[in-house]
Length: 310
Image (cartoon, rainbow, N blue to C red; front, side, top):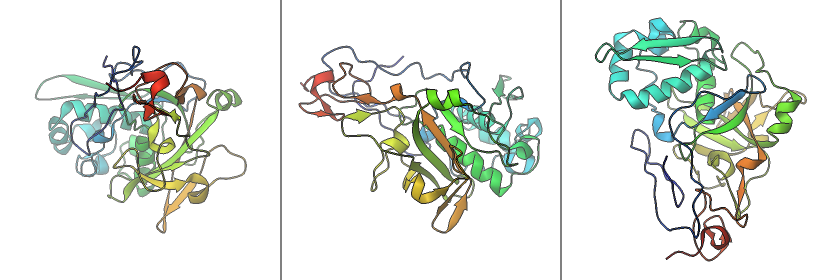
């Protein structure tokens, strides 16, 4: 477990994650949990997942050249020479990315196993959401699957590389709705964001804010949508695109968006919701890893929780 005294920062794509440690709190800091990938918790419905994919795990030049695009997200796909070369270039990073890809694309109860021919180590990646059933079954990836896989991966990005339980809402590429219940909506009562783009084609990775953003006194380990502003992204290279309401459409009273449009391009999105306790406030007596010391009352200068900087 790493305890971070000030806000974590991320280098860009394919760089090592850097956790910046600076000013010291007045009391013990409540830092993020172990960054190892965890099995998803017992959940209310199919849409509950944990996130923890850091932005350096998204390679814009990797997914279209690893053999999966044409051979499918399946056992056959992971046994191609292209995939083996891609995976062996950075097994730790690629293992993490594959865990999220399979979690997004393959349905619950199914898994994909790969044995590295160089090390003979076996990896098993468990399915959960089943968003791309055609690709998961071994077919070449379609544009719709590219978009929905991208949306799901970006929704699972966490600025701090830690795990936070979130409600993932949307539809598969076959139009099947991810299950949810009223209990889930009440537990994950804070709308967070809409996520979309195309990682395969280099069109970009985008996040939008769903509802109100954070006040200056508030912070959250889920920063990519909530803590972004109109001029700056909190999770580069994920770009903040605006409010979901201005970018996206939904059908009827469903709690998720079915389409988002940016620069004349239409995308299939993923919508997320959070539990209220995932938003922290300066002045609550706990110095969170999303807060900094200082003489003020904001998340970047929180004297009440983190003390003054020495």
